Length: 155
Image (cartoon, rainbow, N blue to C red; front, side, top):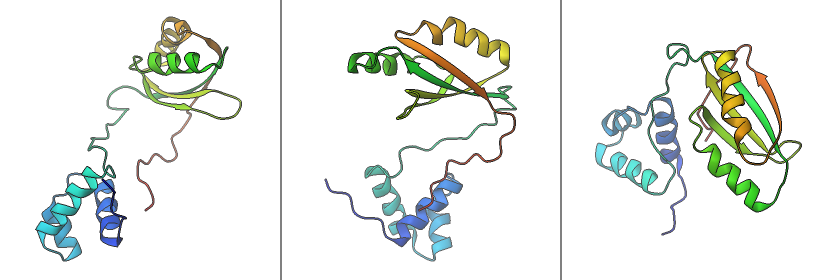
């Protein structure tokens, strides 16, 4: 099934939902001066076509007592397809890893981790991350102050 290109109304709906996913079709329609039914159908189409992957609540890491954000740059010892695939499978099981990216350049993977403190990070590296197959070099950096954090795309 071919996806329909986005028009300006679709883009506006996506911008609104990025800002507040709890907005109803009725709220969005009122803001766009449209009727509810076509806005509702557009939202369903955007979901069906994969533009909207899911709806989530963005949690406060401070209130959850996860104030430490670490970025781990991981370089593998061996770079064969089976080694890379195995690492990607294993990383899925580490609940501390919020994001993982396969990189081009001097490192193979970049991990983003939120933790309660450096002791928890130490235990994570020692007892979990370093035990993954094919781990080579691990370089950690820590966030001193978060300047900007956005999940919104410019569309």
